[in-house]
Image 1 (cartoon, helix red, strand yellow):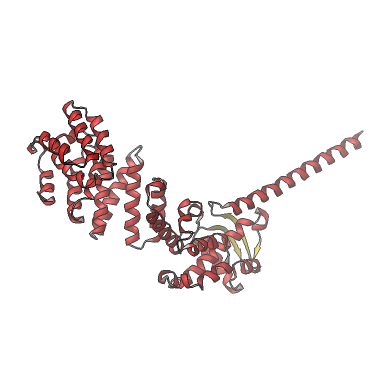
Image 2 (image 1 turned 120 degrees about the vertical axis):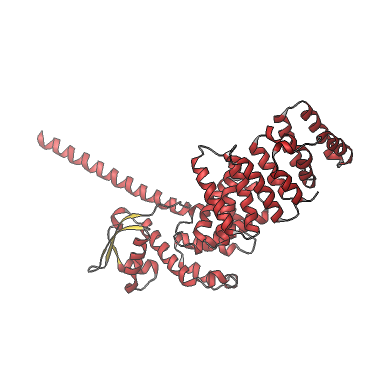
Length: 400
């Protein structure tokens, strides 16, 4: 039977499925690889006793076996279909997702999961989301981006309504959403969803190649994403360390340049052969320079005390950001319009008064800056207390 026919049978009403599972299980007990035969014996025992939960757990152990991949779809077709209504719906979708990878082509896998998702919509919302997002994964592969976006939007609304979801569901949603925005070259949306995907999985679940690809794509999207001016969360994530020794360590170093406002390091990297091999970055150099100037401005404001922020001269900003004095006002207005800072510009005296700077995920150096500022503040408070105590003592002596 072809996969196409299997999908057609799945669309049929459940009561029309009528077959005897025992001959299939008996045959597999003798013909399956030696390391898998015990599972088929166990399947028969549990099925005979109608122990559906234990049978589901046994299936999960079976899927984990390295040699089980090619056996998953026949197992579904000739065994699981008979009792899948008794199976935990989320466990069922996890099995079907894995089995779909063994179908001959992405279009056939898409049709298969579409039928499964349709049957789950009215019975299990969380399982439906998982099935729909895995279906959307194949929609991306066959380049049906409109259908993929429709599934993303629908599932996002369902997830917003669910009080709690398992990590596997969140991981599937954010993985597919990130891949969709990657295909659309929507860097800020990719950056957001890719980070959420990483928060939903353990890095041990990803191959070394996948970790390096994710780190590379996150770095590119951080640099090119409009509105992305805080790299702290990415810089602290261990996935970025996978770029070390991969030929893309320069990209990792560039992120640190932007985060700290290190213009000299940026200029050096941007002239390197590795950078010049990246057309996306080379074509975006003017944008990158402006972004670096804005992030340098943020860092300059952040490092200052509240008092010194209240009066930053155009000359100081020009020196920090390396823009001409005549361009400082435009740079500050850009930062204000992006809500990176809040404050006022005194054009006459050429002074910027900053009252607020965008909150940041801090690296160790920036945490050190806060520590030094707190130490300075603590010293001022101590001096003030001692001064008040001295004045109080002098007053008492005078009254005596």
